[in-house]
Length: 76
Image (cartoon, rainbow, N blue to C red; front, side, top):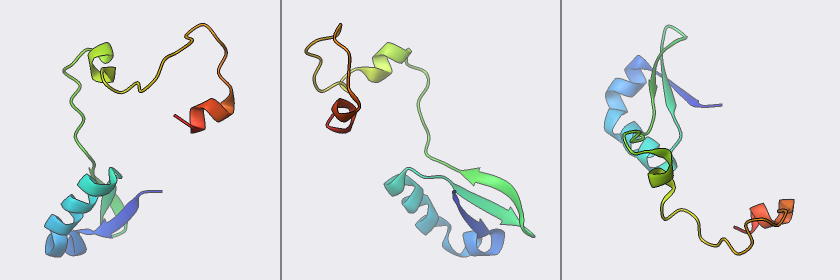
């Protein structure tokens, strides 16, 4: 669940919340009288094609046709 803060809390500490979102990558929900009104989340550039966004993200790709076990995912 995302962290929720009231508008008054957000107003007083906005820069601190922005830095938290940048550091953790997790969204913050801003509420007004208990109702969610805004979501502050990290920006993701979607202008690049999907394959270009993945470039540099794969660390090792030895046997692309072999099945992958669940343990292999955790060790990547």
